[in-house]
Length: 434
Image 1 (spheres, rainbow, N blue to C red):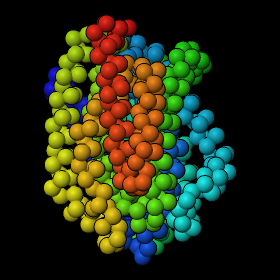
Image 2 (cartoon, one colour):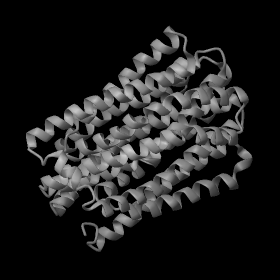
Image 3 (cartoon, rainbow, N blue to C red):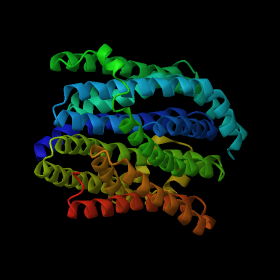
Image 4 (cartoon, helix red, strand yellow):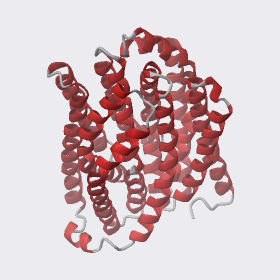
């Protein structure tokens, strides 16, 4: 079982490492420009894109869970149908976003308390990066479907291609051509389309090998079982809405504390992304294994999946805690050479030292419930965690940015506690597999 867990998790961890690496390169490239507002602008504009796209992250999560269950039940028709339904839904959302992004972007940036220079840089980034929507949303579905078929290597190379392309073009466009913030955004757009192309190649190869039903036939059958798909997506969407509300508030509120503070938060959020994407590798493994076990109705396989993923996640999080405590200040200095930004980032760094061990539980339980396609439970527990985030900030708001990081630590902890309590209750009552 350890071998099975690692065979799924390690490729996703390796690929996910390139995601925060991309964030670090973005921060390092922009952070070495003349002014802090460029880094703050990328953080603000990138947050807007992340909010928009990751609110639609249910496309990957629901696709993974439903695909893994179809794979475990050996239902070839359902296996293909999940992909077609996901891609159709992704295309619809992408078209809607492109039609509305101009108006929405202007309205949201008008609400920000950031300085005029930060907002101008953020707009430059946002209005270029928006054109990656069709590829970015399709990539959610492709990644989820490939992972649900217990194939971790194809998603690994897909993510690696996206992020390495992004990193190379980032350096070329920003430092080589001098295109600044817009160049960083254009690099991301091109990278998303490169990843989508590779993803489709992988899907076609698996489709032919498994001799799945013709996509044309499945396209005519798109509405079959769509109600369950929409309901699951609705619950995960509401859960994602709460999640992004907390992260967006942190970015926008941090911007009101000054350009150097929002720039420092951008550096520290890169560290949080290291935790997130490292742990997501094991969460993805959990999704695939749990979904397959539930599709096959195998309680023992499910039990072994839980033990293996929890063990290796603990090992990873202890390692990250040691790294942040030992070399955190060095990592900050690698990202930016602006003295005030370095000082602020080091001041708030202790909050990140505790983050890995507190947050590991929420990532793993997310994977567990996604694999089980239990969206309602995820929605409800996330709502409680989000309320705790805003409650803690309101109680300690006089501490400003320290209150933001305290609230984030509480938020991550409450996510894990909520889902853990629901899981234990359902496991003891033998209703989790139902």
